[in-house]
Amino acid sequence: MRWRSRPTKGSSTSSCRFAKNKCGAAVFLLEQLNLADFRNCESGEFHFSGEKVVFTGPNGTGKTNLLESIYFLSILRSFRSASGRELTRIGSRGFELSARVHSRGYPETLKVIQHGNRRETLIGSSRIRRSSEFIREFRAVVFVPEDRNIAGGSSSFRRRFFDMLISTLDSTYLTRLADYSRALAQRNRALKPPVNRSIVAAFEPELAANAPSIAALRRQYAGSVEQELNALLKQRGGGEFRILYRFDYPESESEYLALLEKNRERELLRACTGIGPQLDEFEFYLDGRQLRHYGSTGQIRMISLLLKLAEFNLVRRSASEKVAVLVDDVTGELDEANKNRFFDAISGADQQFFTFTEFPALPYFRDAEEIPLAGRLGKR
Image (cartoon, rainbow, N blue to C red; front, top):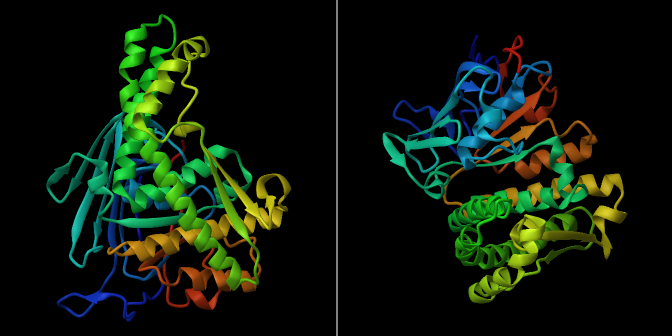
């Protein structure tokens, strides 16, 4: 099946934030998106001509998949924690994504080709070998219903939130995290029987070279997020928010390596690495009480949303490039006043993409471009 966009609403081409092309038409951050064998989409081509774009359709028509594809082109990761194989349409050997963007004031084409665990990234016709170079070209912040797990779920959700935020803001972090994660996976495999101690030890210098830097950047950005969220709370009537970042390893490369050597025999018995950033915790406190254990459902939902708004504010201020916002139906549980606050908070984005089952009858979307996704596009 083929999937093609059909704009049915007027687009806001008069916004002063957008440059004009030679014909006088507005130039938007993301102009075109192409998909092949991504999730349930065999082939899709979309052209965008609005500051606000709304994907509409019943559940199962692929609205979230579209946002996921856009986000993947931004950071080369899915916001659903999926592997490359899970992103590939059933029966296919891989997927391709490409986009035409104007993040730096001139057009560029971004392309990702994924086959199994092998990935190729291109900007124009140039192959990009390091992920950190690719993700600088297009920045996006995503809001999804699962964000409530950041404040209310397990520690892995909080680590993932900070990993994706810091990767967007600091390309060195993405490189260090990837190098650390690769060495960790290899060492953990080597710890399982039959064990070769020299192979286990061979991966330890890579872990020690990256873990302290990861911790330093996590601590730095935890402070930035805490400050930004308290500013957002102040706008909403107050409250004191605090992040306690916990880790249990040295911040010196040599001391970290020595600790790995000291723990090696114990970890051989457990068959896994017992120290490192993969075990770090970010504890959230609201007015002195740990949110995960003592916060109400409403408080957890509110702080989770404010954390994502803090992320958006940090990305928008730090990036010289334009920033897109992707919103996957997260306003359904908000009352009218909080919906308006949310829309006002993201209005500074250079382009906004939304998903709804039906086009929203709200003034904010009066000039939005609607793209209906009629019919189910295959099953997974």
